[in-house]
Image (cartoon, rainbow, N blue to C red; front, side, top):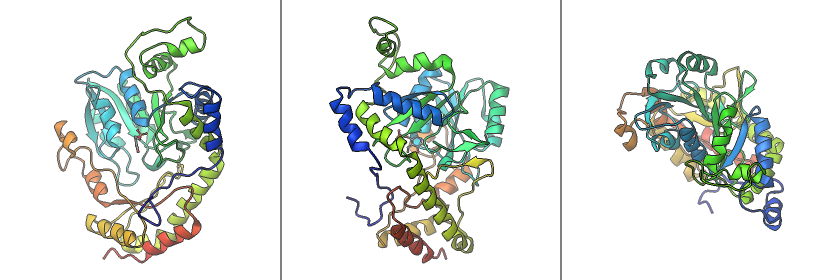
Length: 380
Ligand SMILES: Cc1ncc(COP(=O)(O)O)c(C=O)c1O
């Protein structure tokens, strides 16, 4: 149990999760690639614009599969936002790539599209975009760079499922995209993820990589009469028990999304005046973007005021949290040549950002408590 009256996140059972889990076990197929895995994949494919979706054990593993599919080798480079989750870069570094850190825009906190072109070299194998809070990167500009240079786009779409840019779903822009169903995401199964393969030429190899380097997926479809070791690979396939939980969540899309959007909107409306008066930055959603209400963040004027706000909320039993630590000045980031001052927006945001509780089961009364507590805080 959380020590906080209002935790930052609380996973919910929203519909048939437990019945479906029971069904997966009683149905006799609890390993991966069973009927529930397939049903989740179909639904997700529909949501992300039709690419082939392979469920994975995590978004991190889906990112690793991207590195393998791209044929990343020692000495290759990938463009990554400096303000990102560790494995947005780490999954590629694990396979030998050097992450080339690019700063983010101060408004959306997304990869600054104007700083990408100058970082591309003959060794650049991919531009990794992360749609922070599910608000799309400037995809028109980034797609133009990709087209001009021939460097493919990979979307880390951990935040962006059901978001869109100019009415096109996030997860459909990269040749590959990744999703997360970690317990903090909109749709969860504890730990889980998916790889979206938008270039059909890669589907078969992706299936092999996910199935320990074997052609077992073809065998299960009756396309070969035995399966064998055909390539490198690992165990990236989640069990149907996890898929059962996830399927029930995906089926309650409307209620999950309605509730998350209500909570998000209420924070935005009721904190706007206070934020303006206190010099606090609120989320900015460009007109061409629809976001999936994944997280609600604010930018405090300084690290000291952020620390005080978190402590002020904690005293009232509310857990608010920050992220991400700048990748380029982390212990590992420095090994790739990162240095202080290299990505000033990232460095500032990483000191100033705070996220408020936002989850399906947050009640109106609990949210009122959070809002009242924030309104009672002064940044002076
Ligand atoms: C942007 C981003 N990418 C990747 C991940 C990793 O996801 P997973 O925990 O499913 O590996 C996260 C996790 O929170 C994330 O926020």
